[in-house]
Image 1 (cartoon, rainbow, N blue to C red):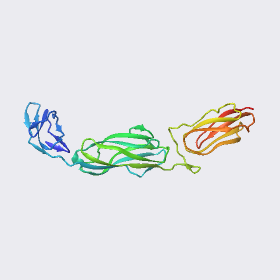
Image 2 (cartoon, helix red, strand yellow):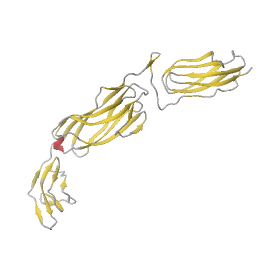
Image 3 (cartoon, rainbow, N blue to C red):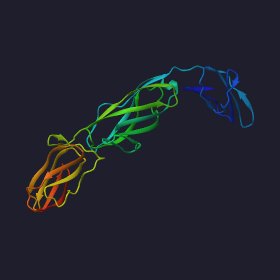
Image 4 (cartoon, one colour):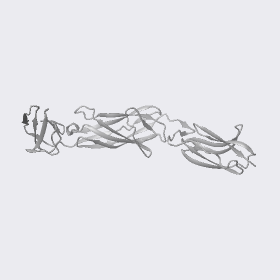
Length: 293
């Protein structure tokens, strides 16, 4: 019998039967066995010729619980459109190899508008404004190594509804060893974000940009329109004549993504055809309206 981490392993045979303190263990008929209790273990093996043999007793003791610190760095930065690797780091460890822990599962949470999974990174699950990515992996570090990168997740940095996001380690478990885990979450920030009119150019990719038809149309006294914005920035809603000359400013100023309603007076306008225009930092929408007297 040899011990690998927390596992006892026999030499190769046709069949196996493990015993603890001289008593057979029900169901323990594989080449390896994971004891849950300290004690004296033996294994009876049978080869292809039907010959059997029993091992000498192996005194098994419970190894102290392992300890690990798992971290995502707090200084991650990228420009919109850049590819970025987010490392999942084993910052420090104690008794990790002795515990037999090799495999792990982890869940990572962040603002879904700022980081888009790419490459081998799973697509994740949307939870509100967050994206939760769950990964399974095997410790790639050699035995005895107490720190290093377990895995690097690939993302595309995106222009979103904020400039920074926490990258939280919601969960991290060593699935085949008794190991305590301390999690240290990280942070990612966009760099090179444009500033328009003194305000950051943020965008909500889940919002829409739209401008409704005016009501009533034709209008006599007042008219009303609704519009939706998908980005933060200088926004104008104004009326022009058919030649494009500005006749009236309805909305001027910085607005954030969302739904808006604007009601405006048209009594000062002569009868005729006009345009009402929605102008955002990156788009322009217009519709015709009729004014009658």
